[in-house]
Image 1 (spheres, helix red, strand yellow):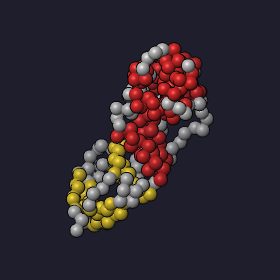
Image 2: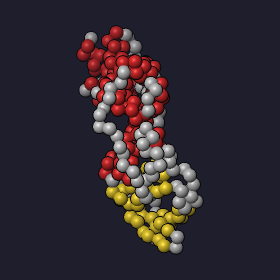
Image 3: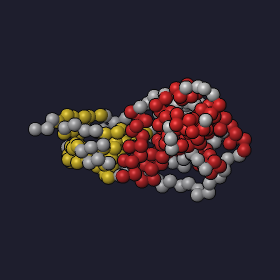
Image 4: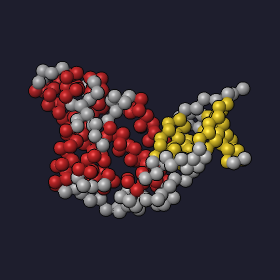
Length: 255
């Protein structure tokens, strides 16, 4: 007989809980005196408002990626146009888009020492926008016109990103320095450069690594640190993905 564990949480103002199932599981969710049994397959999601009391019986082991979203997220992420928005409760719905985004985020959570704060921040924003579009009680209203950054803002943003080659900086910090909202900055940066901030910074790292490989006798480990990678293994993997060959091979080919 499968083991059953109970979970019960009183309502709070924490916002919303989003769960993405990584395997198969069952849970019986209570609504007052009524209860319903739900099957979760890989890629199915549930969303609930922390403001509501919650009680459930969990049958057997379960594997979920859980995320909390504060209640003011939509207002902050969409220039105030999402103020007052909330997510619709969902239980066991298949959402391939959200599942793939969660899978993209999982390696960064498993190897936090290699994770770029900029990458995690951007992917979190994409997840939030998808949730808002699909499950928000108000529609996302964004102008289709993509405005470019001013030259001053472009220079300032790139200087800030270069100063943190390890990516330990968030879009919010750069946007604030430019006097822009997070949403406006992310779109304007891409409209100006053709790349997301994370993609742009990754290219700067690779270009810097190439210069050091050609012009210095530094070891791969030393270059990895200088270019903001977590370690030599991380540097080798990213360089090979971008250039098509490991950095050691590339250096020998350029000699």
